[in-house]
Image (cartoon, rainbow, N blue to C red; front, side, top):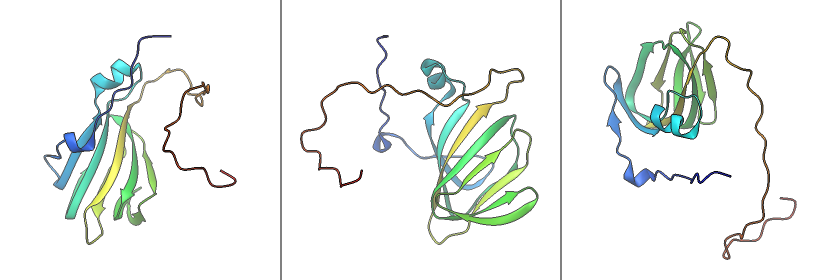
Length: 149
């Protein structure tokens, strides 16, 4: 086992930064390329994004794949050349080179997590992760689990 430690980035300690070239788009970088490197994974960036009322991520494309998961509000997505409505809980898989856009379609700011992943020809195939449970104390004030959970 390595001496690796879990890193915590608290929301209260991260500033919202205005993204240039878009309309009322703010982000917090929750994983940078350097942080991904330290974890030993391939990722360009993971952003927590907020689109203000009337705001938009203008049409564009990337040299990386993007996964967008809407966490709050209603949006319209430019999807395969058509505008379609979506809401919190919906997820978009956008291949590299595909034009896309997200527009706030709500009366309050919308939020999403955007994951930018390098596209590498000949990269090894992905696999589902393995998990190993270990004995560790649980918080003493943890409420009891509901029956069937």
